[in-house]
Image 1 (cartoon, rainbow, N blue to C red):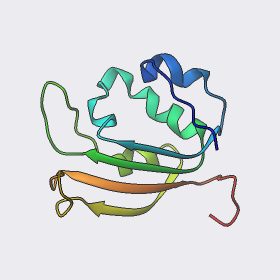
Image 2 (cartoon, rainbow, N blue to C red):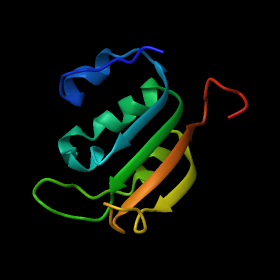
Image 3 (cartoon, helix red, strand yellow):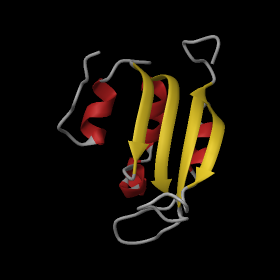
Length: 113
């Protein structure tokens, strides 16, 4: 299948993407850098997700470049259902502050989800 790549900030691009455009959205170590003024992007991610959203993010560290969040709370409030959460402490290159989460869209396009 074809792959689409965007060279833009998420804030500038995500509103141009059609509803439920992607069956799976995957992000790793990106959302933790999203400023609190741009948290509206999370709702847009749910809007463009047809079935699954996978996050691997640092949910605890605080710095001038990171904003800790519990992504289960973030995405479940927006209509996703968390299927699995895994602490990444035993994964090379990650620390215990990273959590991998798999969400399913409550109204997914696949009725067997």
